Length: 254
Ligand code: 3PY
Ligand code: MG
Image: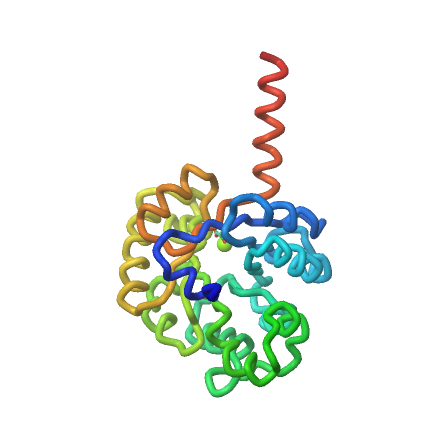
């Protein structure tokens, strides 16, 4: 039958996701109908709010695609609420300690792995599962990504990967570049970041978990896919809008 989102992530070809921060849920719904494999909504830096992102979940599902959210820093209660609505994955920014990783997993996985609370009405509707079946399968149907984007996180990446319920790592190359340069520059494709990416990928592979990353362009996404990332998010809706505007104006002015 239809592979689950975690199965799809490990199936071989990288999952390419849209990355949405615009406030109208129909933007995420429309991008879901393009040839992306999944759609991420960004509540850390995007201007989309909780209610709009919730509304986008069934719109994305109507295109037959999984949805994911990036929650605001430390907002693990929202992670549970989005899983209740039926998202297939949650990305938690700035996971810098083992305790951060444990708390995130507690809010995203049912016992005995975590402490997720019952009330998954949207997910029951979208998965067509009976409550008991959903309870048994939910931990394996959804992906909890801990973002590694600081020196602290990089230093304890093996320990973060070892936390039960953490399914994978999502690298934030821009914040990582700021951290690695001591605040001097933001250069998500710089040499220092590149070295850190190779190290992180090797550690994720050794742990048998999933590696994901943000790409600032389609061309960068191709490089990161070739490196072996399981999921690459191409950002963002707003940057695609601006790129389209620039191209249209350049063409119009000759
Ligand atoms: C980063 O690059 O820091 C991210 O969080 C990706 O948007
Ligand atoms: Mg970041």
